[in-house]
Image (cartoon, rainbow, N blue to C red; front, side, top):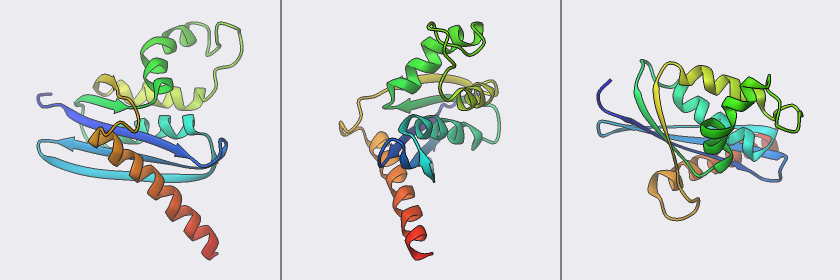
Length: 151
């Protein structure tokens, strides 16, 4: 594990819940790869988590990774809240079930394969990687809605 893979992620939703999309930009040694997808009925938080999962899944071997996201839900969730959720059996401090536990658990499994560092950036602030991930997430929604209208 030498050079860091940068994974820029973003989720988008039109309505919350509503049609949503996720976007990922992977950068490594001067190479780039874009990934994106959509779901017809979801939430923004689910799309943020899905983007991070899909980005890590795309890596073919254990890597040193920096995941960059504008989602405080994602960055705080994985860095601060998840250990306590796990300890409490995926319950919050208020003893309620953790929302999106299925995706949090999936993300934790993907993280085990890699050395992952998390970086939060302010959304829509001109950060190039984040802006590209945002465009991919919205492209995914647009393409899905276009296909749905065509049916």
